[in-house]
Image 1: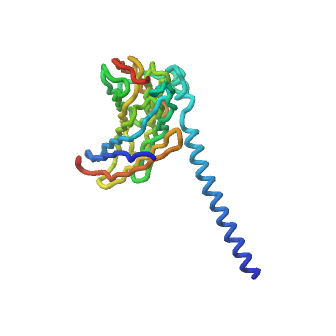
Image 2: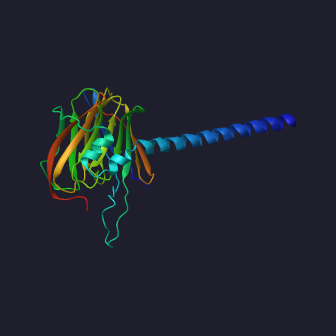
Image 3: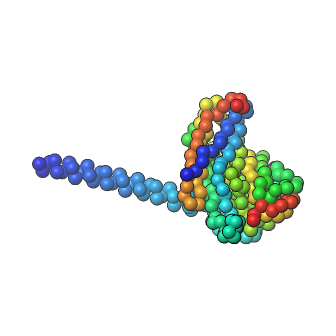
Length: 155
Length: 107
């Protein structure tokens, strides 16, 4: 009887431990995800603040970053933007729409077999420069391209 | 609940050309509905793309990405039949994961 009780307690204990471990793991994954989302960058209202939050202040312009975007976009709600970084060891690409209420649109961390190429669609409030901020080999580089917007897409 | 994504992964040489279309309202928190009330912020914050379970792209997004977001990327060293997985998480904690196999030609 006593032995039964022991083993039962042991079993219950291990189940409890497992459950706690599982919950802790879940909590941790949510926390790290929240920590990686660049809140200060995404809430910045000026390009200089965005560059600061990325750690890219004063980054030089590079001709090895190619931004593909229309010269004139009729609909600001859907502006196709592609960034191709030919810089070796590209680790991160950020896209910034200079005159949006919150300029930083997206940050892409490239890892493993990912190539320095990203294409997506952005909303843009008005005509402005689109910046690509590229981190490669621990250093930052930027490129700019102006996109004219006929109808803004932020309202 | 979140709608399924449309994902295409097509092999070009040793690189997979991956195109993802997600269905999401991507509300900016600035738009007003018909009653003049502001539609609350609701957007995809994080997108993770994996190649055979290994992360190849970890994206952080703001509300400035268009509605029903499109994402295109290239994955080096891919082969036919490799698994490309995509998971997004929005600011309300909603999640969606879909997976496709890399195919040799366009379908």
